[in-house]
Length: 158
Image (cartoon, rainbow, N blue to C red):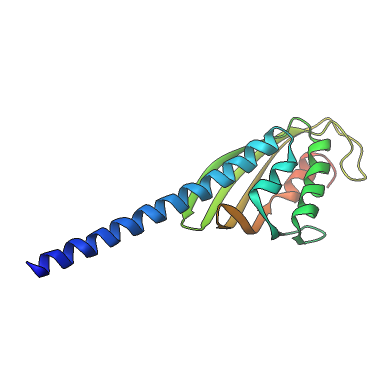
């Protein structure tokens, strides 16, 4: 009898671990979707609810590859001004506890100056990848790569 009781107790522990893992995974996916929804509304202030205050955003190929949340918001404000109809769609997502990998695509029309370049009126489609580390429902570190060269080619700037 004691042996089967130990098995039930161990099984309950495993079930609890699975429940905790599922909750963490759901928080991670919800965090990412909240961010994308905010960007699609043109609302970069959502970053304050999604990213931890000390979060570092690593963007490959960026002039400043290690941005603070404030720096990231500033960069995205400029991007959204240049592409006011920008829409981001999550194509694939893999959640693993406190990590989430996301493959996204963004489409929009360059209808305002982009950095020092005048508006081209051209539509672009850009693919990207994100790896987020999430703790307590907030992104604490992000690694992001997107096809910057492809975007510049589509705009006729490269």
